[in-house]
Amino acid sequence: MTTTAPPGTAVTDEFRAAMAGLAAGVCVITTTGADGSPSGLTVSTGFSVSVTPPMFGLCVDVRSRTLPAVLERGAFVANVLHGGAQEVATLFASRATDKFARTPHRFTPGGLPWLAEHSLRSVECTITQTADAGDHVIILGAVDAVHAPAVAGGSALAYVDRRFHTLPRS
Image 1: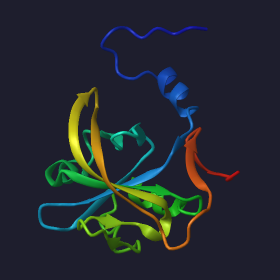
Image 2 (image 1 turned 30 degrees about the vertical axis):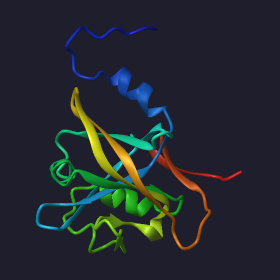
Image 3 (image 1 turned 90 degrees about the vertical axis):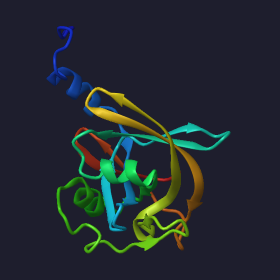
């Protein structure tokens, strides 16, 4: 069966169901606000844009409380979560106000929060472009640094069918 949504209609249940089946890696995006306080959110929309030059992209809901801090700072860290970081992903997907008080973190040399204990790698970026896209903002960033945790390796955290999954490493 094919379902066609009328032009201008909000995202349909069929589209949501189709996108739920699209497996995606899970990142926690971190930054600092104008007052220096850390801010962050979970996304399953992080993606590699380019290797030469290195660029990373993500999409953020316009209603996100973290979006203004990301745009004001003009920089972010994409913490690519390991398979054991489901609780961190859930926390940063919530509206909790004490996310960083409940999550071990350190700061990069650039002054951005880094979730080293929960990440396979973390990509520090400076925003180069933004574009409005429906109910999201597309953010592209030039990669300034890639941070590795003290203990490398491990499995990746993925999100598909509205659930977290751990992907085994080959």
